[in-house]
Length: 159
Image 1 (tube, rainbow, N blue to C red):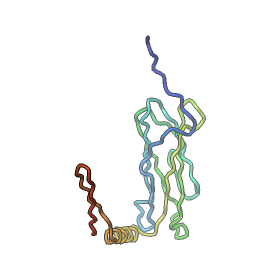
Image 2: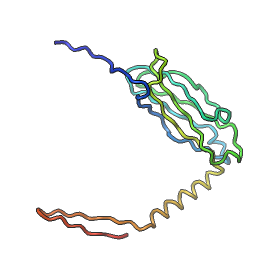
Image 3: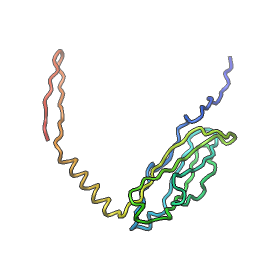
């Protein structure tokens, strides 16, 4: 009996969407970070069309906010922060990438990417380093397990 190869029925909203990075950090004092790139991957056997939505479109310029991705290809989406003022520091904005089949209107999947404007890359690095040191210095418990037939023993090691 000959079996036909069929494409699975795609359910609205359930298709995994592959985007990198999943977070955008813009730094007010570093103009090179005011323009960033999202890469949308299409690992599927069919073409996708995409649309980029934003919670605060007045703060960003999205080059090619809609388009298509060929099967097993990717596209780069350039996002430019255009309102770098201190009143926006720490505010979390979101981008939503919606994908659908080339010939369909309904969204098959979506992925959200958060974007944050921070005052300084140097301050952010300092905070991350302090956090790493603090996590490293906190006391941790590690358990050593040894197995002997019929007997399980545990030793507690403190750092």
